[in-house]
Image 1 (tube, one colour):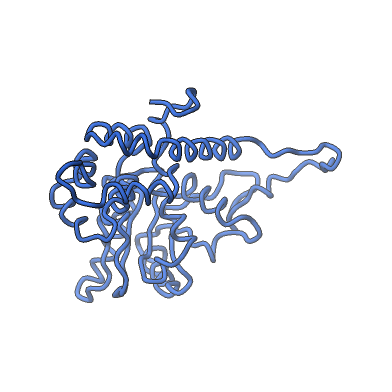
Image 2 (tube, rainbow, N blue to C red):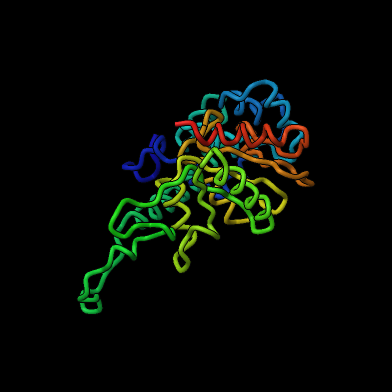
Length: 288
């Protein structure tokens, strides 16, 4: 299934390419329950969600949006082409026809952005330095050896500043004990001066075996944490991902993030299990 540009295979375009306008319109079509046309429940079932999962979505204000978000985070085949195929299979060709122009436009923008990000920056020879660049400029962390291998870590810690006291305890329990793990803590280990998004992407994908996500109310309001979590999920999506380890260390007033609910979390909020908590977390981070 191709878009207006026949050279683009929609089955290869991830669902993240669809912007909020398309997602909102999908909700307008699919959220209302009707006996004459398939609704969001039929779409969720075609996406392999279970009966209990679908029943839980029923209490959501916008179940279509929740289904799309969770399908995107848990499934490796969550693509634009697959979504259009599902809509056709449940006989909602009316949605496909009405939204096709908007979808094609989102895909076009996504492809353009992907192309731009893959192209090397333009360098004007006249203003380039004649001095050879030092390898030290490629260093990301304080312990990077400019002439050797890059510094590697057992886990990247995704956290908010307000949660740093718990991160400090994590350092004491996992690095300064018999576990002898090596954690990447941004405020401690990363050199200042570069783009946060670029650095964290590099560290999460190439320098760290896993990522520990410290969940809190403040975490839910952090753009940096949201980016880091979704980036890590994109590298190994789905409920079977061993790359991401969610950690809850205090009682939350806000709802636990839905994109992580398919992953087994480590719960520190139970006082009787706090010793066991560190043993379990260390074991998870020590796995090959």
